[in-house]
Image 1 (cartoon, helix red, strand yellow):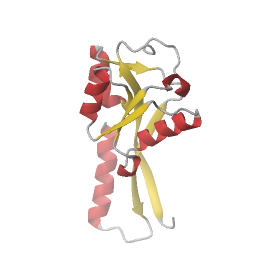
Image 2 (cartoon, helix red, strand yellow):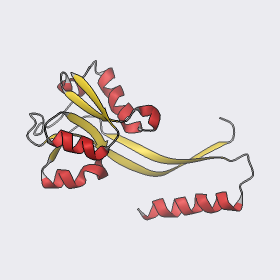
Image 3 (cartoon, rainbow, N blue to C red):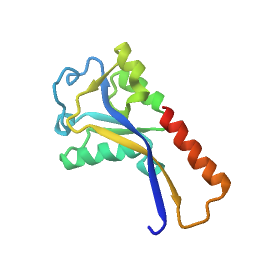
Image 4 (cartoon, rainbow, N blue to C red):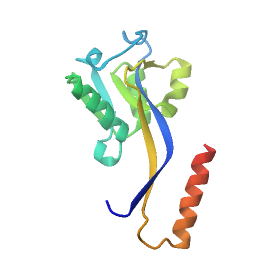
Length: 147
C-alpha cells in the first residue's frame, strides 16, 4: 500500500498449553497431528486481531488436523482456567500463562514450529505528520524499547 510505513515494536512468544497431566505434557516434540481429536480452546476470532490464533489454526490445517471440538472464548483468563480443568488445549501468549506454568497448573507443549507474533505500529508516511502523531510514534518506541 502506497505510503504505508510499519515498524515492529515488539515480538512476543506464544505457547501451546495443556493441562499439567496431559499425555503430551512430557513429549519432546509436539506436532499438529498429535492434536487430532483434541478439544481446542481458542481466543476470539482472528478478525478481532488475534494473530497467534490464526497462525496456530493454519499450522493445524496444514497438518491436516481437524480438532475434535473447538470452543471460542473472549477471555484469556477463562481459557487458562478451562485448560487447567482439563477441558482441552489452547494457544496463548507466553506472558499470559507464565504464572500458571510456573505453578504447574498448565504445561507448555514443546510445539515443533514455535509461534511468535509482532506488535506493529503503522502510519501513512506520505501524509503530514502532526506534532501529536510524531510524539505518539516516539513515545510508543520508547515504551516498547523499555519492556
